[in-house]
Length: 143
Length: 440
Image (cartoon, rainbow over all chains, first blue to last red; front, side, top):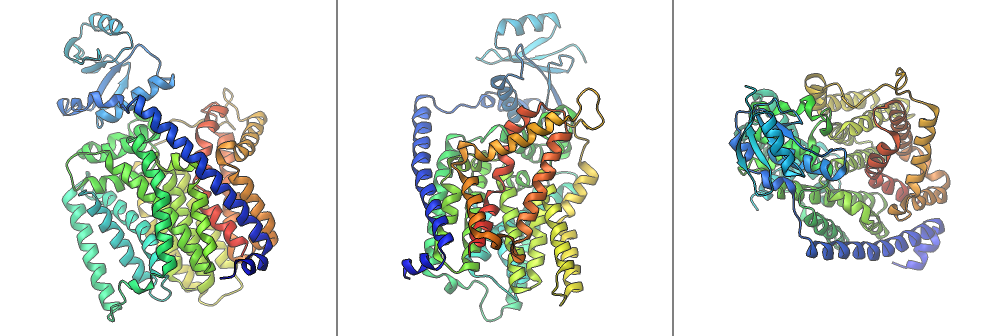
């Protein structure tokens, strides 16, 4: 096909295609740079998913619908909101009831583990399991 | 690797189904396969949803059996309708088609790479889409707990086409492995890019359309969102497929394309609430345009076929909205609220933000280039066969702006900043399609 004829037959299209081609070239280079940055960052800090630490807990709580989730931080802060969302995903189909310690089982997940320990004592819950992150699954005396 | 099997079954079902529906005006094999893939994934989600309705839970054996039966039935029908062996016309693959396929595969690689950096996807993948999928897969009869008001942060009013597709694939295993949603998001990218390319190639017959999928996927922002395991790209894919079907109908007047369009709109309506709005706008405008068309030949029959196909395709959405949809816990009617009124300032903020978003650097000038393309085309972008596209886009943006203005639950700047870019991104495949055709 004669490219010159193609371009001259429809000049507005030719101009548009030239601009798109330029955008593509720019996009490819900037995209490659972006992906490379992410790859380098990943090598330094490998991927981790906060919810992975909770896999298996849902199985252990089969038969329950709700799980209280107590935390000493605000999930309106994106970092902690993400954490909450990831734990919820890992524990589905359990439904996390945020800061409700009247559920039969409650997960205590504090930034400051001591606060969770104090809360457990306050509500007279009985710890069942603890992770090395300081997260504690406890049974309450509510039911 | 086992999960490739259910996806292959979906694609085959879609391909065979469209081969029958479009027997009077079949597109070439590459486009048929890509449109078939979209149709097949919807069929799979439809069957998963049927299981939830009939059995009150996911019944994997039923879902697998139903797929098998559908595949066999469609295969038998295709054999009957095409006795001369034109069931899989591989000779329709030209050299340029092979080049196009290779290109689409290559440009999907960055999406695959990025997806593997974030194997669980983005925030809404954890908190909404994959969460819904897990409730369906693991919840048994308690799957409906995903509509519990305590999960209001997880968009409980949304339907769930993408989660249902993921659940279908999980039926072949025992665990809700995250490789499935990761793989499905890459697949949808591949399908969208392929549909865009081969639809343009069908209509224009030219090679310069190879730039279209390149333009789509050379934008790193698009790559990031495509690999996030959200439903927005599904919205974009089905909207594009519906528009492609409409254009094909406008050119050939073959009613099979109206059926395909209805099917794609039905799928679109089951992706998320924005998809439902977009599908209804498109359906309504298409219906009106057909009714007002000067070409009255076969009008009544055509409208009946379109309407009937739409009813079938919208069934999951209709049942979902009647049976499962909950009152949104994230809606305040600002027009009637004294505490959080819909003010003129809020409306101004919406309009200003929309304008700023289109000029934002993350788009690499996409919207400016698209607008330039429309301007260069002069009136041709608004010609009859393409008119549905701009009318739908304008109506959709007006409705969108209205929702942002009236729903005062969220602070407007936060809400726009977190959601508008994704909604607009879903329109990019159809916009590229429109601009390329406008300049022909």
